[in-house]
Picture (cartoon, rainbow, N blue to C red):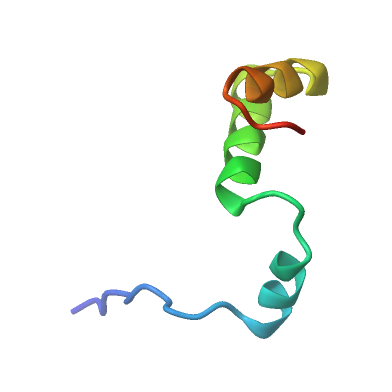
Length: 57
């Protein structure tokens, strides 16, 4: 029988240290990375899309 993984409730210490220094919320960063990879957008396009949503980058 295969054991199911339980979701992690805390971040690894090294990752938590890096995420503390972020200038933008993690959700915004992940959304931009997702769009950048999935739709081959330029950084200028991403900046315009974030500006349309009220997020200054």
